[in-house]
Image (cartoon, rainbow over all chains, first blue to last red; front, side, top):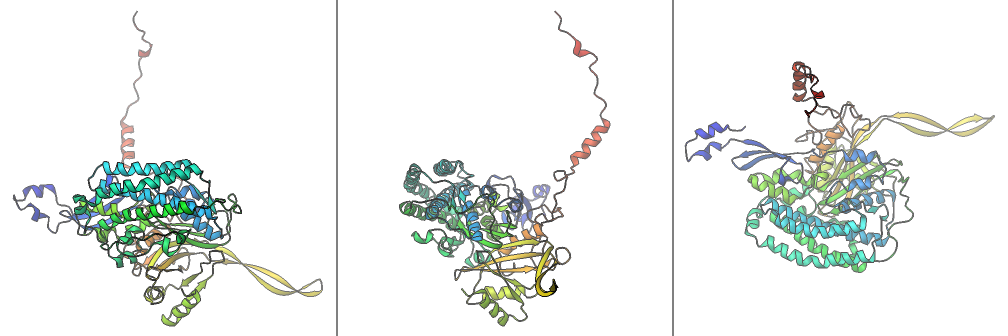
Length: 386
Length: 221
């Protein structure tokens, strides 16, 4: 338990640090803390400044998303998925639409498949870019890098807004396709954003890679071994930073990803620096995917006309569908009893499961490192607590 | 990857005393699953993870399902005498199917890049015998997800390292994801120390003094 401050005052001068040996100080970090990326709490036991135990506390943003999903129609959950990971509503929509399409056996027209890839990769761009900004903010680079990232993110959100009517709560995908067909002007605007992105990214990457403080704060901090990452079900950039080659875009080959050429970047240390650089490298690959997708984008309908949206009742059965979201494997598990709403509606949230190893990564590091390690996981509480 | 029948046959051959059943999935998704019996589940899970051709090292998704008591209709052909002639008639009987809680694990292989193999376990009923073996020792990713199922469905995972409520607060008593869960009427009400202070203060407060006609005063001209 904690040591009273009067004891500290009585300690002889110059020997104060030894009084803390073997004494654990329990502190509660959060839920209101600028670096916890939302209302997330950690009960930390410290020996001096070193973390000896760390228990995450969840539930501050819990609203039982799954129960609400079981009490509404299949379509009614679609706008609600936007609120899971509110940075990446497009990929949430896609994962849910994909699962329902599996459940009901719905075909998706080719143009819609390409549009989904374009929007998912744009989402990945803005998610990874703003994460880098947040991470630098966590390390003490207040404001400026984050605003640089947000400036670029805003350009992508403008695209989302002009397409779907909303910057963040897009509600764009539908079962069997997408809601609206983008105009030629939108495609041109999107191409311009993608074409201008590398110039920004080069500048931003230099800011990170050559920064002495970033290197000192992230290298050899929060190392996650490949064995533990696989066992703990870690997915997304965090898994690949530990050197495990597992990207659902390659493994499952959903959508039209098999037709697009891209590499899967891998880290080899599994530390915070690798996780940080993984985002930069993935953004570069995403830019390549986007360029190809714009080139190959075919004409045609954007939604399967046979699918009824109102009174949509998939046949009895169950399905698990998953996609590679920017944060990891985002899956939806649906059980249908033939009714208008799912009997079971389950979200497999990547950032929740990626938190399984938070304690393992933080033990032995200082409190200041906890913020960097947590930041490098990339969590959004809307998804963790559901 | 092998078919589920082949996997079942190999489990039966390799794991002593294992009882596995294939649960078909009628929908277009075509994702049938294996139902494991509770006693042998851990041994079977070890086999699934360590077998050289399966190597299901990645447990992606763990989830609970609540199946309420339901009526099961069974149709039998019965010979009956209808209008003097013997005919075959369908006789429909309704039996009460007991409800149970179910846990579903979606397993994949990161090493061999195949999957899913879906396994499930069932409790005996929904109230008295709700224990299932925890598979956290085999796949660490089940740790938080099994805690969530315990919290929201009330399934007790034996040998789980840290089985506590996770999303609801510790004092909460019910299981909100169960199909028969009813929200309390006074959901928002929580007694606080503040209430006591207010009650005590109310006892001591005297009536508000009247204004003694002061409001009728007019400004002097």
